[in-house]
Length: 411
Image (cartoon, rainbow, N blue to C red):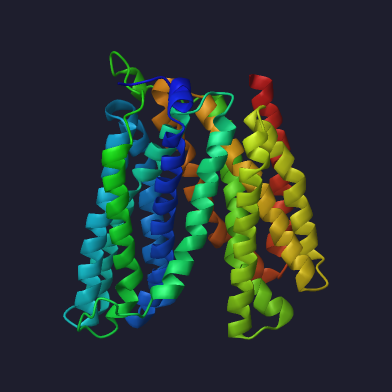
C-alpha cells in the first residue's frame, strides 16, 4: 500500500535510515572505482592522460544519463530505477573485471585494452548513474517539506561517509589476492570484486525491504514536464559554482601540500589523506548536526556556508604552517556540509511531487559539471601561481550572494 511522503516518515521511519545505508554503498562503489583506476592504469602502463581521459569520459556519462534516470523514476518508480542502478553496477563491474583480467594475463594489451576498459566504464557510469537520482528523489518522497533539508542532509552525509570508506576499502584490500586466483597482480582487482558483492547485497536489500514510494501521476504525462525556468537555471548556476570551487580545491590539495611544505611523496600522501578526510568528516558533522535541526529555507543554508568558504580560503592562502592549512580545509568541509544539502533541498522544493525524480536528477548534473570543470581550471591556475586557485574561488563564493538574491526576488 502506497502512502504519502509525510505518512511514510511517521509510520515507518526506518525507510529513511534504510535509504541512507543504500546511498552510502552507492557512493562507496563509485569512490572505489576512482581510487583503483590510477593503480590499475599504471599496472597496464597507461599514461596519466589516458587514465584521466578514461575517468573524464566516465564522468561525462554520469552527467548525461543522470537526468534521464531521474525522469524515468517519476514514471516507473524510485525502487525500480534504484534496482536498475545497483544491478547495473554489479553486471558492468563483472564486465570490467573480466576485461581487466584479460589485460593482466596479456591476452589484450595497449590501446585495445584501453578501449575495452573504457567501454566497460561507460556502461558502468551510464547504468550506475540511475542510483543517485532515484535515491535522492526517494528521500524527497519520504520527507515533508519542513524536513526536506534534514533529509537531504542525511543524504549528503551518507554520500560523504561512502566517499571516505571507499579509499579505506581500497587501501585495505588492494593487492591482496584473497580469492586465490592464479593470475599475476589479480589482487589489484580485489576491492572491485568485494564492492560487487556489497552492491549485490544492497540490491537484494532494496528488493526485499524498501517499499515503492508515491510517485506516479494519474496520466503519467506530468512526470516529464519539469519546466526549465529561471528558478531552475539560477539553482543550477548556484550548484555549479559551489561544486566547481570545491572540486578545484580537492584537485590541487596534494600538489599544494607538497610544494608549500616541501614534503616527500610519503608525507604528501599522508597529509593529503588527513586534509581531505578531515574535510569530508567536517561536512558530515555539519550535515548531522546543524542541518538536522534546521527547519527554514534551504537557500539560507547556502548563505550560512559562504562565510565559512571565505574563511577557509583566507586561512589557506595566508597559512604560516600546516595547522592553519588544516583549519582552512576543516572550514571548507563545514561549508560544504551546509551548502550541498541546501542546494539539493532547494532543487527538490522547486518541483512538485510528480517531478521529484526529474528535479533531483537535473540538480545532480551540477556536481558532475563542477568536478569536470574544477580540475581543468585548477591546473592552469596552479601552474601560474600556487595560491591562485584559492584566490580565484573567493569571487565565486561571493557571486553566490548575488545568485541567491536573484532567486529569492523571483519567488
